[in-house]
Image 1 (tube, rainbow, N blue to C red):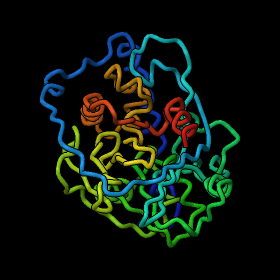
Image 2: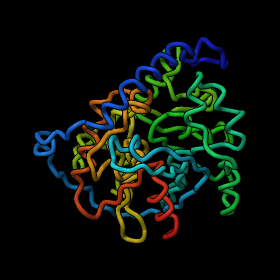
Image 3: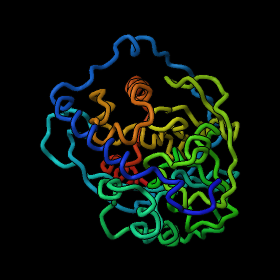
Length: 320
């Protein structure tokens, strides 16, 4: 893994600028004529059983920052002129056998410590509003010590889902699919949206989703072999994007979906992100759109929490 934040490991700036220009040029037409749902794919999806939960977990939402974006680009072509508030949050999971974080999102001072790693003009597009509540402070507000976290599970390795690692002890391992590790860290240049600084000198515990289909998802991994934390395949936004299906102690089933969608509106309307920003941040647009179909096909009773969905995340936090 690279040992320094040199330009050699970042995506070069000019290719990024050209990609931004291409994405911008493609956006107006897609706002008028959004991509149509794949009805054949929807019809082919099965509803595989969920593993029986023999344990439950306690879920705590750590809200850290907000930003906004036009609704019509979050859900391509949505008939709205309004701005949508987005959140950047981490999720604390307490299982009888472990305490861990899903998406250790932001560190304090993220604008200076992490965003400069990203090529121009990406920081201008993705910077959260100030102030930002760092991960250490978010945990301290709940009297939780950094040294009590056993491991972290990022839904994927984009900067805004792992920057909080800078505030966790280096001994805290990162559990993630091997394909995600290779995508983010295996090449000379970091993919757009990946800052390698927070990932440096960390211990990685990689795995493969080699379990059976669960719900509409083709692969899974039952993390504790008790049905309480089941990882499912949400590939598309990044090659190793995962969802974390939780059996919560209030009797609900919650799916932490990372950036498979930025808002539940995408699931309801079956809409991908507009080309700007989707062509920049979705590694495989077709696979990402297929994943949205899988989320759309979920049965009632599965509460999908997109990582940036302010309305869904704050509603979940209010119950916890």
